[in-house]
Length: 237
Picture (cartoon, rainbow, N blue to C red):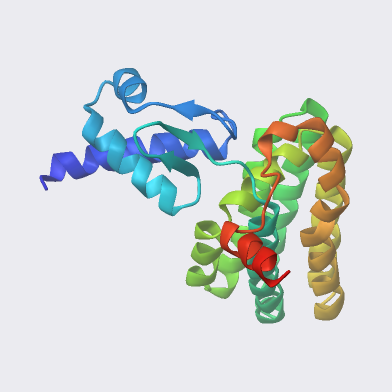
């Protein structure tokens, strides 16, 4: 493969993934190779390759000879991704104790001030970006780069549902206040309380799922049990 071909494929993949993760391409959106190729002014080959990569990411469902659809958010995947993230975030808090400098605390406090400003303007995209920067910065302090990359690479369903939740101003403010509690606990060198606050932060989605289902029913998978498990259960009966 030529270098230029690879760069075009990566550009198409990144453009589509960014649009899916930002919900510009909403769950359930039907995409065609031809339409995407025309819109991006590329051939159909890099679009097909991008679709395959996005399918591996769990972000699209490909129905051969029919259509490609932006995957709906799967609650079972959200829970698994949350488990991975919570485990790594809490482990990182233990490493943070004694490593955060005055400069680091200043950077995190500034980030939270910016988060407050996004609530006032209802700029949910900016809040999600600052939210990610807040968590990422703590992994930078500990030097656990692979842990953060793992979170980023295994949070496709969780990240999209997070974006939906901050469309609500009250939830936006709640998110900021939770960040403040986490930071205050770290500043107090109280690792156990910081981890408790982090777990509360990670589990906040559970209290919002029913509301999200009512508000955006077309965005979610209605049946999360794999077909083979459903059929196996039927055979046992």
